[in-house]
Image 1 (tube, rainbow, N blue to C red):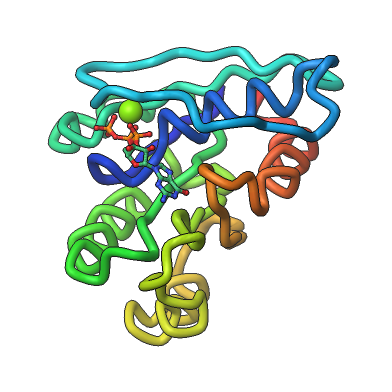
Image 2 (image 1 turned 120 degrees about the vertical axis):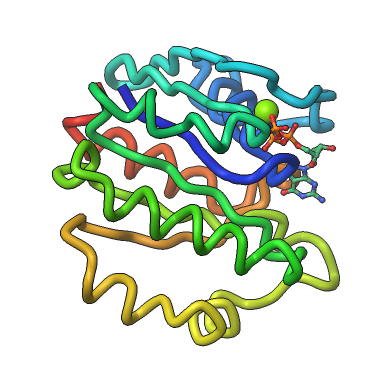
Length: 172
Ligand SMILES: Nc1nc2c(ncn2[C@@H]2O[C@H](COP(=O)(O)OP(=O)(O)OP(=O)(O)O)[C@@H](O)[C@H]2O)c(=O)[nH]1
Ligand SMILES: [Mg+2]
């Protein structure tokens, strides 16, 4: 089981829908128009079947205060940030630090997704890294942390996310 967390509206539900489409046999790489999404109130379980089945549990951003109660049997974590929203970044960083220091996620592999890079105002990963001091966070964390820039809307970087999930045995 892989946990997908991040603040409200960062694009978690769209990502899951896009990954599901991308991994479908008849996709041929054309994702088409982005499907509509609604804010997730509660939790959203999705199976992605590619080379093997991967179950992703998205928790709505509005569930932030109780995310930790779902960390129990999760061994991989997708944490999403909105690269086009600098005002949300510090709050997201605090949430990320909380998760990384949780005992339950000490063994987890972590992929940090910087989403919405299709928007003209997006911050590059280098800008975000220096703003939230990501190299320090990664150096101090117990987990193995990888980062990727994506656009769930346009499909940019999604093949890398799928590959990470495939290569990550604990997301089973
Ligand atoms: N431009 C752009 N918009 C995006 C992208 N990803 C998601 N969105 C839009 O952002 C809005 C929120 O997306 P959701 O996937 O519902 O966000 P969420 O993280 O699931 O939100 P909660 O369920 O409330 O926690 C929707 O209008 C999406 O179409 C992206 O990469 N680029
Ligand atoms: Mg959602």
